[in-house]
Length: 275
Length: 233
Ligand SMILES: C[S@@+](CC[C@H](N)C(=O)[O-])C[C@H]1O[C@@H](n2cnc3c(N)ncnc32)[C@H](O)[C@@H]1O
Image (cartoon, rainbow over all chains, first blue to last red; front, top):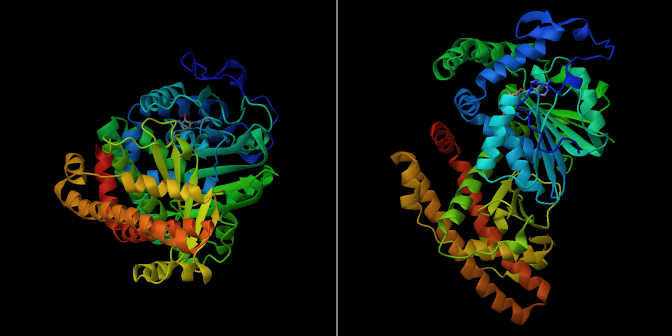
């Protein structure tokens, strides 16, 4: 395990992770990518996403509860239940932000286990660290600033990797999935909790209305930041649907991939194993 | 929800019907476990006049599998957090002790039908370390809670009232369970071998917990409101 309790204040990214260098052939990565509905230069996405999360970090938890009517707690609980976590496990909570999943995993893996809260964004990581320390959770948690595309861990390190509401913000999702695959132990599993495509047209419409009309206004009112919440709504629509994400996981090498729709497909939990 | 996906996510439960999958998507199991967890830990926190020792239970899990319930109830203890916490999940890969039974059987128990008979008829099944179940039961027994004043501090009047009715029932169930377990122990120590004795305790504890779980599910709509209220704090 590297960079235990590393101080993430200094910059947004360790310099050796800042620029993708591998030649990449996937469709989304030929120079441009999406930032919400905008098509932007790939290199710009990291800093634009960073801008969003620096801006929302402090009010992130409050907004999460408000925007989802508290249901995000149940989605996360479902993820924990489906993870099969047990005492002694090593867990990576990737794009872990303010650490909701980390808090739960920390109690379930116990002293023999370890949870790494990793996020690309120093502000989110700092809010997460303060929150978990306030809760008295210190013993088995490491904090690492890292980009999901270039995970700074040895191969075969983790029993479980989770990425909750994080993958859609990642510039090159295929690369991130491959990177996750490599740090999982054989027998380990990945759980991706992410907004997805509602199963019914009516729900889809209602959800659209909510996301594009109500959500940014709430963001403006509570967090004084309508633009960031507009980005969140747009990024949700641009995220691959259930079947697409499942095949992306297959392509990255995961086996027995599956997904489960939650709340009518507003959110889906994807799961895949490395054998 | 695609049935095939559902099966893959829950490989142990290969007979999940599509209606169960739909219910799962509605997260009722998570509502139930979240509520149980909230109530149990609240009870533990309020129980500061009694020293409860969790040491032997650290990182141990007791699972109740009820035929009528589409999900399991798994209780795990973590003493690393302060105060010690009980976590409730609807699904686990491994459990130190698993009790399989049905609400039907529990009703028979309430009607005082012989526990020994039920066990012999395979209506109750215990797998794993029975001591774990006993220890959980002991803790449940030693909880005495003044829900009223504590909850009123945190919640609005209407939900508090409703939750209190629920909480009082649980408190009563828990102390009733304790007494029943004591009675069972002496009865079966005389008549049955040791393994059966502990099974009887476990099933009694199980019975009360089942009733609680059922009630939790029925008030799920109300709980949604509570979540919103708590979240706004
Ligand atoms: C919506 S938040 C989710 C936080 C937390 N997992 C939760 O569910 O509450 C998304 C997080 O993804 C992080 N993130 C975005 N791009 C990332 C990347 N390439 N690598 C790692 N984390 C990233 C952001 O900094 C942000 O904290």
